[in-house]
Length: 327
Image (cartoon, rainbow, N blue to C red; front, side):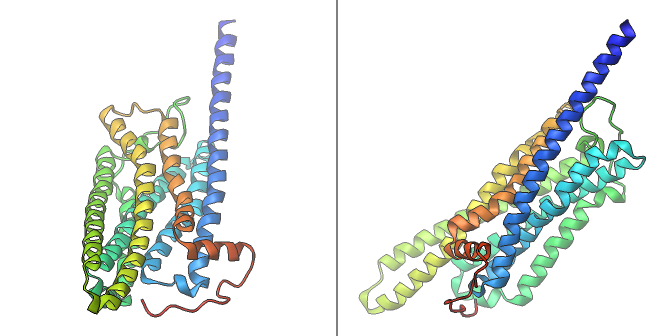
């Protein structure tokens, strides 16, 4: 009788765990579809619309490719590692790949945001030197460095810096970050991910401060140079619109990823006391950022918005449009 009760109790726990995994995977797959659709639109817009092919758009496209990989690769890996992983002999390998890809893409997003912030910083703070500094010879190596650095850093655990502990039955999800990474590496992830955010925030303080000073100087311009000052003001307005859009993307990134950073730090401090489903929730909330970016582009940039609409309606995005000059 006692054994039957214990067996029924275990069966109920197993069924409840399976239900949690099914719900988690369903949310992940729905979010993945939204991420893929939105970021495919961003990439297609930049490729098809000549007016969107600017220097800043190169970094935005790199970020969109990163977000697209999150939807196409990372999200399915999360599902596979937690459903197929427990049933196969090398299931932990799926988990290790999933975690490394997640870290790689997280740092890719941070680095891309740092790159586009650097671009906006030069455009607003030193506008007269911007075109001479941000050439193709500079942009391509920056983007290449972003991808190489994030890939190497994400897959460092495969070089030996990790601690692998197989999850106990009934302890939560099969693929758990704390059980597959060394505590020192997790701390390094938090530090390396946090430092660029400080740089970006300081850069934006300087950007908006400079923009305000430019506005004051333009307002005080004498009539003899009013025309030139008006052109400068229009250019500054254009650059600031782009800067505000990137600032909103940055804000969305910080809000989306901050809970996961906090969870990682708390889990290290409490020695793996955070529930695996809470950890997974932090990861999913972080990936929500990849779905938000296309919405931000459309809401803050009429050119993106119109191009999205044209692509969805299968219209010619360059109809009645004039290609921009070099930028």
